[in-house]
Each structure stands twice: as structure tokens, then as C-alpha cells.
Image 1: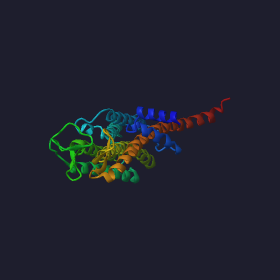
Image 2: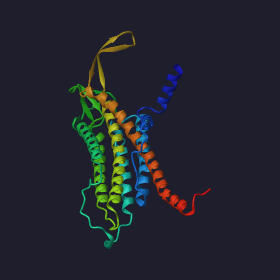
Image 3: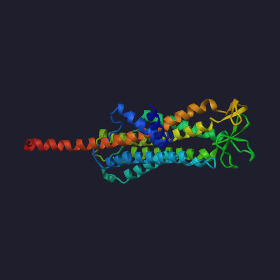
Image 4: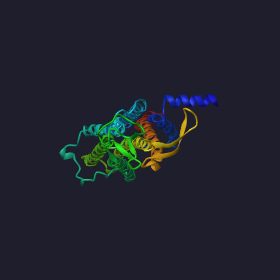
Length: 346
């Protein structure tokens, strides 16, 4: 038992839970309780190759970014009080770049000539997107926006002589502090220097998502194209694009909640009782303004960050599985034709 404890402690030192891949890899393994693929791909064409690239390499890129920035956060101290302003929205920004790159690749697919285009009414941007996924995406985006706006709204400046509690960075005249227990002191970690970049990344992701879905929904069709096949390939495209952004959004929301939850858990001890010449413990502990929700927010943040990484890992693997299944389905008719014309090979 002691050796098992030492092994677990060594693993935690090597891969702390704050690093995104640690919890994410565990949840990814658990996800195989349900082995069914979460994505499918169109049967043929350059669209399929683009979606495979986005689903496999793009998802892994977001995982690498999330792991790298969370590892930096663990291994370094926040000296300014807003060092992590770019790290928390980095997964969402990376997912947005992947979606934008995939959209540019789709735009390079040749369009039908003017005389070969089918005349169809203009579709809304969400014509091929799953309503359920859009609701989930919207709720998570609203939670991220509300958290960031709330943290900006409660921020204030602080006098240079404090008093300061919790993680005390170098003094800054910027509004990065929140009042501790109605002005008793100050905690760092709030304000626009910490959370404005998250709102910018969220707005950019929403704009790119809207533009990509609207452009693909109204892409010209060949007159000989069948409506079911076109609808199927565009629904699959919208689903994969939504999944990539969803993974980045979940991971970023988790990082933000981990940070805000940790910042709100500061406790100040009063009325110390000395039990020896060099040891004392406080009789009264004073908590901050949102201590009641800080701990749950921090724990849910761990789960969300790990869940986002696990989801992206599963998306990458399932996209590769879908590509293999598509390749096999394309080769199956050729094999059947060869067997029917020449007879089975012996």
C-alpha cells in the first residue's frame, strides 16, 4: 500500500491534475465504455480529406496547446497578477484557427460553372447544424462570457500598501484586484487584464463559426447533385466544425473556472492561538466574497478542462476511424465487382 501511494504521488508530481492532459487522458480512456464513433465523413471528394485533416490533426493541435499552456501555468508563478491572460483562452483560440483553416481549405474546392449551378433559395447559417449542439455551444459560451464579465465587474484598483492576501504578485496600478470581505483587503486575479482576452477569443470564435456555417450552407451546387447527398455532407461538415469549437470552448471554460475558483478560495486567519514557541493556528478564518461557490467552481473547472481534452482526443481518434471506414466502403464495391466478373480468387 505504501509503495502504491508513493507511485501515485510520483505520477502526480510528474503530471499534476492542473495539466490538461492528465485528467483528460483518464476521461478519454473512460470514454471507450461507449465505443461507437461520434463522427462520420462524406464518402468521396476533397471535402472528406479536409475534414479528416481538421478532425485528426486539428483536434490534436488544440490538445497540445491546452496541455502546454496549463503546464506553463503549473510550472511558473504569476508575478504580475495577470500572467495567464493569454493562456486560458488559448485552447479556444486554437480551435478557432483550426476551423478557419478548414473553411479556407473548403473554399479552394472548385465551384460549378455558372451554367451548371442549381438554383436554390438562400439558406440560414444554421440550416445544416444540429440544434442540440448549438444549444450546448450557446449555453457554454454564455457561461464563459458571464464569468469573464463578472470578474471584470468586481475588479478594482488597490493602494500600494494593501493589505493583500492569497497569491500576492508584484503591485500593479491596473484593476486586477477584488475586494476581500468588504474592503478588509485585496485579492489579485480579477479585472480586464485577466479576462478581456477570453471575451475577445469568444467573440472571434462566434464570428468564425457563424461565417463558416453560413458560407458552407450557401455554397453553390451542381445541377446533377442529389439533395440527400448534399445535405448529408454538409450536415457532417457542420457537426465536425461544431465539435472542434465545442472542445476548445469546454477546455477554456474549465481553465477559467479553475482560475477564478482558486482565486476566490483565499482564507485569512485571525486570533491566532500559540501552541508552542514557533507554532500557532487561527481560531477564526475569514473567507472572501464568493467563497461559497469558489470551491465547486474550481472542482468543476478541473472536470471541464479534462473533459474538453478527452472530447478532443476522442474526436481525433473517431475521425481517423471514420476515415478508415470510408476508405473500406469505397473499396468494397470494386472488390465485389471484380469477384462477380472474374469469379472468386482461389
